[in-house]
Amino acid sequence: MYKILIVEDDPIISQLVAETLTKWQLEPIKVTEFEKVMEIFEEKKADLVLMDINLPVYDGFYWNQKIREVSQVPIIFISSRNANMDMVMAMNMGADDYVPKPFSTEVLMAKINALLRRSYNYTEQNNEELVHNDVTLNLANGVVTFDNKTIELSKNEYKLLQFLMRQHGQIVSRESLLRALWEDERFVDDNTLTVNINRLRKRFDEIGLHDFIETKVGQGYLIP
Image (spheres, rainbow, N blue to C red):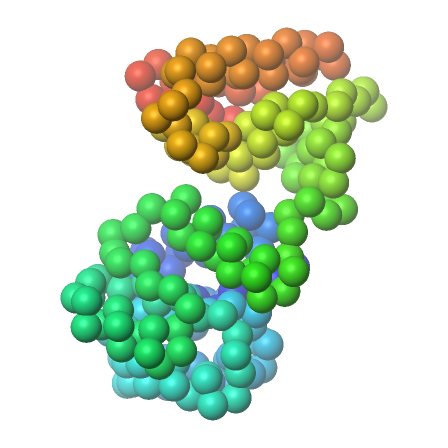
């Protein structure tokens, strides 16, 4: 499991990011002692760093420079300072990406996964599993197991279920699901998503799994 160091002094944002990382099977490490960023980085051996700019004691640029003196670990700045000069400075100092606040957790996760893939040959198609409410999704082969019964999902069914299971407990909008399944949702009929959801539910019926995915009218879908 990859370790993600969160250097963010806003506790609400830090917690939100940590919860999102956990759902994606990544290990969040929240920094709370901001004078010890380097100590924590070296002790925990973080695989990627999420760095705010405005921090207590020293700013994010300072810690970015210190980390770069000893490591080429991927660094993503997340900051409300969205001036072009800040972005240029961050990239020139060796950061790998810059995400302005407020940000979408989906966009942030896309950037994190892309950097992990580039840096560590990381792939989500491994032997890990997602488990929720006695339902297991094997990420290596797209097989769902429930009550000792199994079904093998199609590519779209697999992508759809994986995305919803990672966001369990949250309502996921139709727009988010369209983006997750198809790179450019502008060219996809909205009815296509409904068809895929219904097909997935029918597959679940085959193994006695009912009402696993809830429809929230006007909002999206939810795995509670």
